[in-house]
Image (cartoon, rainbow, N blue to C red):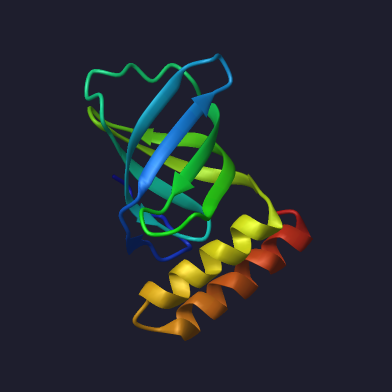
Length: 125
């Protein structure tokens, strides 16, 4: 996969539910996460990904909190899909930030990426 990322990905495992616009539902396990996207390993390796836009819910095993996003599929392989977040609610963004801070070796990187992301959103990039 081409490495053209602006945001550092952290290994992170959690259950994921994906709901495609066309009605297709998939489940999987989160492989890694960043401020702007995820890589999900699908439970059904034979799943045919025919959608490009979806809603996804990430449920942490040890918490009642969830992360909710709208996302675009930007990468797919035989048993995994990479997704870029296109919409996120404030509660999910706050929780995502907490997860990244708790699992990062360098919280300054997370802080820098958060500022970079906010600046790009304000400029419309």
